[in-house]
Amino acid sequence: MGDTLLRAPTDRRYRLKKIWDRWVPFILSLGLFFAILTVVALLFTVVTTGFHRISWNLILNYPSANPYEAGMRSAILGSIFTVGLSALICIPLSIATAIYLIEYAKGRRFSEVLSYNIANLAGVPSIVFGVVGLGFLVYGLGLGRSVISGAFTLSVLILPLVTITCVEALRTVPDDLRFGAYALGATTLQVVSKIVLPRSLPMMLTGGILGISRALGEAAPILVISGLIFIREDPVSLFSKFTVMPLQLYNWISRPQAAFIELSSAGIIVLLLILLALNSAAIASRQWLMKRVI
Amino acid sequence: MEIDYKKVVSKDVTDLGLFKDSDVVIKTEDLYVSYRDKLAIDRINLEFYKGYITAIIGPSGCGKSTLLRSLNRMNDLIQGAKVGGKVYFNGVDIYSKEIDPVFIRSRIGMVFQRPNPFPFSVFENVAFGLRVNGFKLTKEELRARVKDSLEKAALWDEVKDRLDAHAYSLSGGQQQRLCIARAIAIEPEVILLDEPTVSLDPLSTAKIEELLRSIKNDYTIILVTHNMLQAARVSDITAVMMPDENMVGRIIEYGATSEIFTKPKDKRTEDYISGRIG
Image 1 (spheres, rainbow over the protein chains, first blue to last red):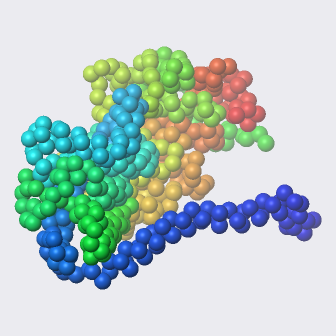
Image 2: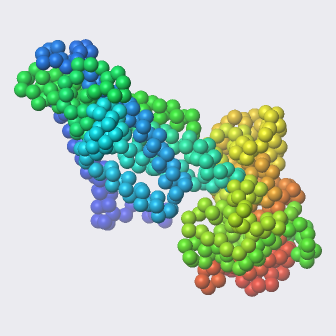
Image 3: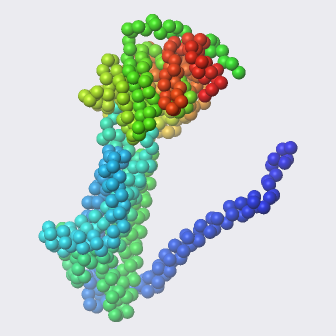
């Protein structure tokens, strides 16, 4: 009798089920395959056109009409300055918003309306943020075409993305832990600061880095804010004129000389390396944080 | 199989009449709770006495946990929950406007179904309540308090050499005793336990039952369980809860555990404890 129990059924439905079970992962991995293909194609083109043009000149020189001397120093510094500043503005704001939505206003109608609007905001084209920044910050508040205008615009642009990740991070903290703390007479502030925040900070950090990566690649809103200008000086203050890497690349690509096209490919490699470094730093710090809190 | 409850019931309390005017720590008056306008429990009138363990038994979904959560205002945290009627704690209505629920929860501790230690060390788990309630203790006093709490929770001998170990490295039963120690540390008057042993093995369960009996003199303990043998073994007083035809939980019988389990007055109680329903 035990023998019959162990033998797998042999009917058609069962065999079909087994075949499906075997092939589904392959079908699903097709999606992954296309993603990898795109990245490989992109990297291949960029590296073959631009790799030989990577030099210290590219990183240390100011832009120039001579493609063999031109560099993106002002753009690299501009990017670091604006994006760094926008992260400093955006990440605390996002964490605060998420904490309010999940820990204080949960279930209230106001909180739901707010959540929908944040999700909607994430779908607004980035150029719109640029135009709003131009009207409100550059002219309205008179901040001019400056680093601070760019940073505020970028921070508003990535705010929804980062806030949504922070909300998700808070949702991963089990209610068991919250109730446990409340039942010991903890206030909401104590529950948040001692229990919830330490647990969700690593994931929030990931959200912040995602936002930074997005901001680093944005050209359109900055184009509106700073204009397509030729800058031969470092951004030294919040009110300096500035440009960013994607804009510099756009500028080079739109020139007729082949040497500038090559240079833009080299610039893309530099941009990708900076992104890679940022993401690695994020992953490393997340791992470090996770080890400490869990 | 008929269980002979006579062998297991506690004989500490044989007649509730003896309790007239004694230390009633918590008293409910026509307490009801609804979730989004659907009544969950209704007309709950109970008294809980200092130094005794009261068990609330009843089938799943009859509102035992809801009742328990309304005694320390944990229902405030549940979306859509609305509490009506009165809950008196030492004669004060805990739902009146001037009462701070945070303070109530520090006086009425709670232990949950699944062990939920914080992701800290064993020591910090017990110290947490002391820290958030602003106890001004020196390092030595803090250590002494933590040790005392762990001893009361019958956990000290097992963890004294690894107070800095992460709480998640303890077994399930140890984690639950840690949660009890954590609750005891801030010296509450009442401890609410919501099926504290459902996720534990029989040995861990026995340890927790033993510890509850050993600390009961200093506290008012209210134990929700659907394990009738546990109620019979541990509690002095039992309240039996049943859902009515509208699935609203009500108390159908309340009395000394020895009475309820050996001479139930209500037919439904008799059916329930003998395992015919529920």
